[in-house]
Length: 134
Image (cartoon, rainbow, N blue to C red; front, top):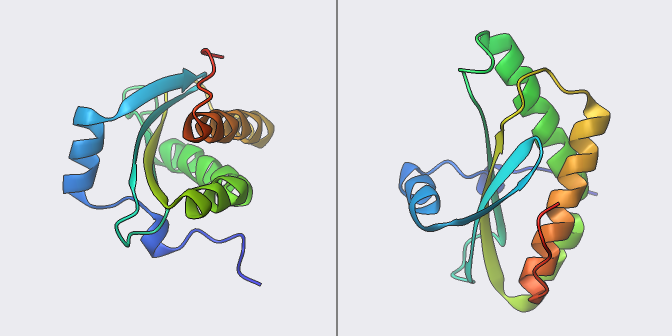
């Protein structure tokens, strides 16, 4: 059973798509995460594409940046299924980028909780029930 995966097709790696996302995408904050997203109609791409970034200004050591990215990817991988199913049902494609804006190393519990809030907020946006900032 391969439900909790984060495959190569689900990762947002194309420089062209990332630039388009940062230029024309919408965003919201769920501290310490900034979410930049774009919802489009399905074009044969995977329904959910995801990327993560951590500022080298806040974390000088690559080990720390990689740790934060690993925590965010793991929390995303375990919680994305309801959102992915909702996108498949509606025939939409969601591209998003999570930027960690905190200044100290987080623990797994905080990242899991905040990622859950991000997914809930995105599900509401897809349903047309945009909620105020949290």
